[in-house]
Image (cartoon, rainbow, N blue to C red; front, side, top):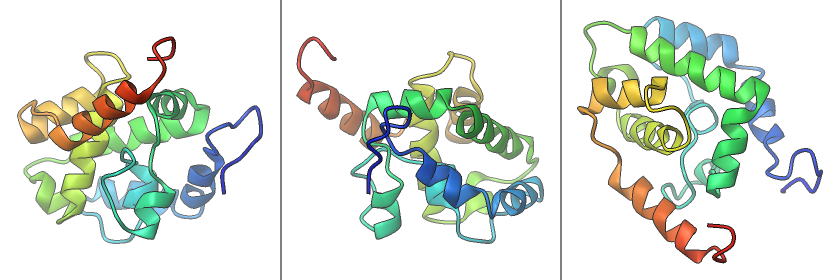
Length: 156
């Protein structure tokens, strides 16, 4: 259910509520260099249309505006940057070794999404460079482009 609250038009609170009980565990797992439990959907969110599961749909980012709002959110933006930095701190492990499959693909799409809306040298761009040789996730870019093309000309 989406929030109609003018202060949370994207219902970002759904991410906060999902993260709060497990965030210390998330940090510990990333610090140890290996994801072991189930939290990928709501920590490294992806653009809508990439996942078919209930959790993927529930925690999908539906627009460029929502991605910007997520990054600007005091808690969510900070947590995403912290978690991405923890991944960058992992030494001598591939992204597949850190996350396993298919979560390595989810991480790639999440980094691609948020790199589009942050500074050029952001932790998201650094993660893309380090783990994916700077190659962006093509599906994420295509979905973003198609979503932008659907907006009225004064909004895109």
